[in-house]
Length: 362
Figure 1 (spheres, rainbow, N blue to C red):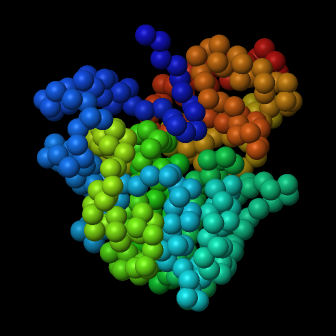
Figure 2 (figure 1 turned 60 degrees about the vertical axis):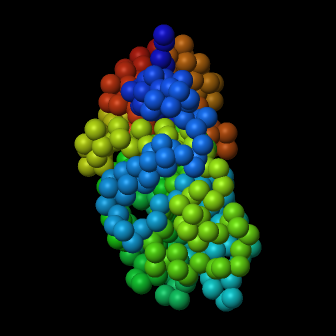
């Protein structure tokens, strides 16, 4: 069996021992004689695993009993509309902090449901190279919520501080850096994350919502768009994405085994430092567009001196067993997505490849 070094941005690498456990249980899960994909979501065995995943998420996040954990579908893109559909209208508006492609996509959906107040750091040609400073935030104390995107998968920037928003509920799309580092849960009223970067496979979206914020949600909504309905039914109103939740549960257990969020942060800091040090020491051969204080520790983006060299880099990397390094189609360049499952050894090997590539082509 040959395993590559996988820097795909999502779906992304999953810890090897999680895959191996899933493999060993694929035909007979918990002695049921069935795969978890075949077991009824109303069964005792499934419900136990489902609730275990919720408990593990709360434990790792430091969330108390005043939080509901929902397992939904449709990715973060569905949350872009589900959040304002539940929380806006009747004169209620929201603040949106626009720091990249996906926060712009969130704005596109939210403006259908109420007035928005924007803080944007979009540069020339639609580029995003930094995170705004606290003093730059244009906040409305009467907003229904403030929405932020903690890490920008495409442009490679990340909030390195958590904004102060007063008494207004803070909502965060954490899709690409959730559980890569500790965060102060008490600062937030809601967070959501597609699982396919740090929490497991595509197919399930985790929504964590505080009871006090949930109470503000509208009642008269389409059933599948209602946070209250999903919370009342423990995300079991309809058949959930059982297999994705199962892998999520195994991945959360792996994070706990690794030492929790503080341990993951230490590992992720080391990986990011190794990569950025190599970029900065290349004499401009590798050039990162993001301001240093805003650099992402999950998605490391950089350019080479020409498009031809970038194409050669991607081709040679694949030949060396390093895949998924081509930048997003909208930006080009190179992108290393160094999520939790990519440990330090993979990054060191990749930096060795980068240095050898520069030696041959610089």
